Length: 304
Image (cartoon, one colour):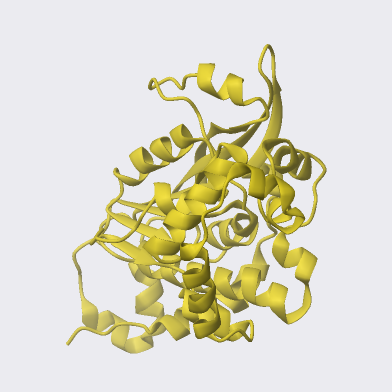
């Protein structure tokens, strides 16, 4: 009979163990650089990790005297390579193209929720109109991908934990569907401008080390947005790390990565191998059009 540890147990393990290893700074996952002739560019990291070798003696010790009865066993396969893809929600189209290319190499993709397709399409239209950037939910869709697994709260769960009835959000979605917004309307609406930061604002917030949304809200709301979602991601990462996979990719907001990565290096015993930086949001939209990645794609990004 196949025995499977519950997701709840994995979450408890993640919460209790994550503090054992100190987190790396956020700048290891998302940063702003000054590129000569281009200007400021926000970059996101893609980091790879190798797991520890399986040790059969651990299990034998756990079973005590009965361990000797196990005899010689087949060696376990290596634990999968784990890749952490740091994300922001608004970005250049080519950034998302490069992320999709990375995800296509994975046996399993663990992802953060981005809402339903209708809402994502509406958000993408607003973001494009207001900033010229693109939206993660529309550019990296997860529907129909059989090897992709949610490592997050559902949208309904998140709203309920924040004290919002899901029907309220559905009504708002219906209202937005009926609205015919124009760039002029967006520019004239201060609330909408606050919700849709410009390229310069995104980069300035990152450069100044401004607190994340979870840190700004604090208390129980911040705990839901950051820590409780991190626990779910760490639980799913634990489960995948003990499966017979070759490559597991976690694609998640950069603001979540310091705690998740500390758990990966600490309790899970993984070792950091390499990191590469993907050019993300350009302060100058004309520079974004002219820059190419090594694979012939302009770089991209998003706000987390």
